[in-house]
Length: 418
Image 1 (cartoon, helix red, strand yellow):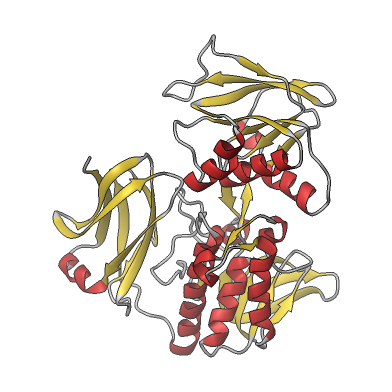
Image 2: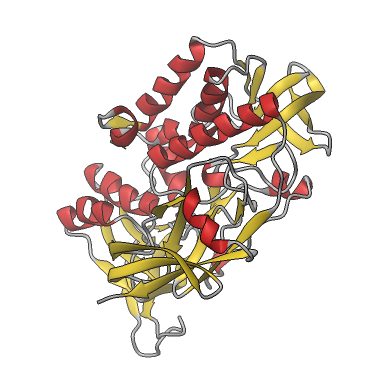
C-alpha cells in the first residue's frame, strides 16, 4: 500500500508530491497519463513562470524541470504513460499502462491534480461549416512549440484568455498576421499584463463585446463573420464584419478535468467545476484532496504550485494524524463575488490563517471584500483594481471566526467604494 498517490504529474502534482515528502511521507506514487512529467508547461516556451516561486522568470519547461529535479532527491515513485480509471471508496486507485496492464494501487490518501482542458467550438456552438483551420489555442500552441508546425498565416482569435493572448504574440513573432482578438464579454478574461505585452505591443486590436457568428470556408477556413453583441450576449444585426483569414483560434475558457472526480462520486461546485473542498483542500470524500487547475482555474502556475504545496502538506498531516472533525462553516457569495475556494471552513481547522481565493464578475476600481456571519461582520479587506481575470486571495485569521459562533455559514461579498 502507498501512503499517498498523486494523480497527475503536472505543476500541481509535482509540487504536492514534493511537499508531502518533505513532511515525512515516504511511500508516494505519481501517476501521469502523458509520457513525461510537466503537463502543459512543456509546450509553454515563453518566459514569465516562477517569478513568485523562484524569484526569476523561467520558461514553462524550465519551471517544470526545477520541480522534477527536486523529486530526483526523493524516493517518490513515478509511473508515466499511465491512465487512471477510477478511485474506489477505500482510496484504491485503478490504472492501466502498457507495461503493467491493469493495476490497483491502494493508498491512505489521494491527491487529485489532473489540471484542466480547453473549451471547444462544440461547447460554444459557432454556426458555419467545419473546415480545417479551427484550433483551440492550446492545440495550436502544441503544434507550433512541440511539433514545429505553423498553423496559419492570417488569424482571428476568439476569446481573450491568457493562452489566446500568448498565442497572438507567438504567431506574430513567427510571421503570421493576427487580425483581431474577439471577446464576447465587455472585459477581457486575461491578465492585464498579457493584454499589454501580447496585443498592445504588437498593435493587435481587442474587440470587446464582439463574437464570431459564422465560420466560412469549405476545405479550409476562408473567413469569419464577427458581430457586436448586446447586454444579453446576442448579436446585433447590422454590425457584421467579415475578416479574411485562414485560421480561427478558440481561447474561450478552461474547464477543470474532473471526469475522474465525478466517477469517484465527489461533489463538484457548478461555479468552479472543481470539487467542493475544505480549507485544507480535502474533498467531501475522506482522504481525497484536490489542488491546482482541477480544483479551480488559476492565473499563474506559481499559484498552482503554492496551492499544491499546501495540499501536499495537508495530505501528509491527514496520513500522520488522521481526520479532523468536519463540523464547518459553508461559504456563500454575493455582491459580485462569483465563487470562493474553499467552499467549507472547519470550525476547528487548526490553522492560524485561512486563505480564501475568489473571483469577481466585473471590474472594480476600489472595493471592499466583506465577510459576514448573518448580520455580524467578521472581516473587511480593501482591494483596488479588481478584474474577473485576476484571482483574489484574502487571508482570514481563524481568531476572527469566533465572531461567527452560532452560525453555520460565512458570506463573502464585494462592496464597491468608488
